[in-house]
Image (cartoon, rainbow, N blue to C red):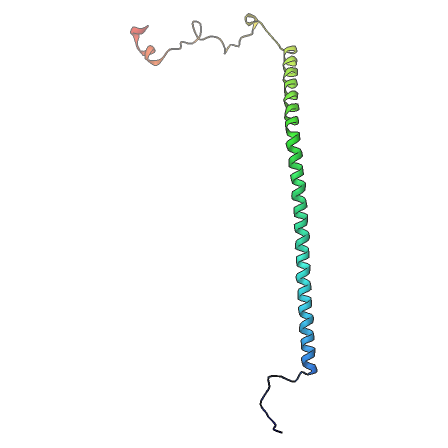
Length: 129
């Protein structure tokens, strides 16, 4: 029987090694659980985002259906408003014949009784007068 001192590549597995491996495995499990929680949160957020996009799509389709009706009723209301506005304006219109209109002193015509209004060339050219 020959005793060899050369290593076989196998080491003696002690309790200390077992504790270390157990702690490393627990840490890896905790890390993976956190990764799973993060992925679950991301999936839930994406699900909410998809639900919001679907709701927006429904809103847009409803709006496309209702927009022509709303534009039609808006045109109808505008026509009724214009008709009522013109009727009220005609009912409350104040008309004064032009010969009874009071004229301010500042609004009187300039010629022949008011100011002499001519261009400078006509004013300085004696032959044009």
